[in-house]
Image 1 (cartoon, one colour):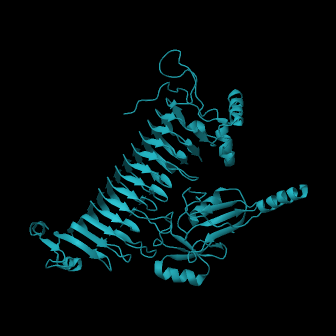
Image 2: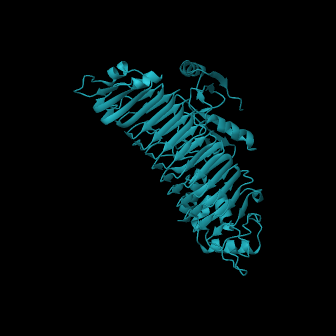
Image 3: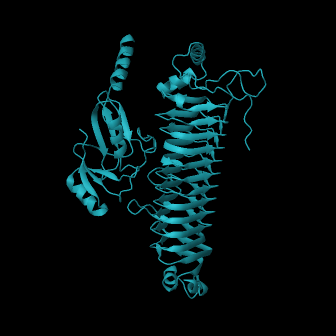
Length: 401
Length: 136
């Protein structure tokens, strides 16, 4: 294998080169060779990579002409770099992708620009994949002509770093994909979710932005997920959430920014989550808790100008602890000047309960009736869960780094 | 005038009472079990209670889970026909194919077919095994 690396050659492929087609170059190439592509290549079928290769574009464009994806990787140690790929067309039968990665490992995909693809990248039963500094524009307009931008199925140890994904069905999709890191990506204007986790454990996503998607991020049936320093912004619509959590256990949600979403965090059947030092600003609902969610902690968060801060129909809400959060609706006082309000804060008001039961009553928001209900309930609390309380509300917003 | 008003109110009331299956609005409706927005029109189903309330699902396993966790009684149990995306067929008549090669929204890979022949044709393509629905 070492000698293979030392003897590695470069094969130039262009219209005026001795090797004119990529098919020919792939046939000639020995393992660990480098293909240098220049010019525009119109394609009838995808190129299949079955040996370790580096494929580097030098002003190269691959055009699928609406008929085909570009690369099918079935090998280890493959690099694809600096290529523009476009027009895969749509296929419901074959999961057509600009790059399909099947049962491969050590694949690096760097500096790509993919336009008008169905799937951008479809990786299946592969591990140690790096996708970095790439741009995926699916140009999808509805759920039928769009597929996922980066689709990972039964993968392990994947790194997605500084990519931009837009106009796909789900921007980034992980199913049965473990031990992966998703850092500094931007996922926006996707039809369903910015990012979607299903049955994927021990993953982290840090410093990403999810903007104007059907819903921000859905994390479902997973555990040990670390969600830090992400921004969830402008995800609104009837079923829209910044972050949807369904059956998630033992995970951390820290220092994220939830801004202008219909619901900041929607959690159902979640256990042992730490929701700490996040900012919830200008959301319809900052946090909605349903199903039997237990043993979750909310501390050091800033709740700023949300229509509703917390809402829950869960009877055992007392198992979820709120403490030392800042609530912009808090009107208590601090006589001993320790920075903590002397009166506990009940973040769920009566009207939130009414709206959860009867959605249509939202038309009464900010009306006299809402005020009357809230005052009546604060005097004689019978309906809203009295245990849903922050016993130590902060007087000033928590200063986050 | 009064008669006219009564008639309008009556019409509104009557039309409000219509019950039965409802088409799934893809990309808009969300699954009543897993909360995901429903986008794949080849999978999923619908439950309609005897009072006429409609629950929609993105995958057969969500429908099954919901069915077993609720105490409501259902007048209709319907699956989406894999060969006619977006149309609903009664679960009792459906033949179900379960295969890992069917990449369904919730990962179990269950597709529903109108008859045994269509299920068998799909089985040739995707493998897996054919079952009947056990829900009444």
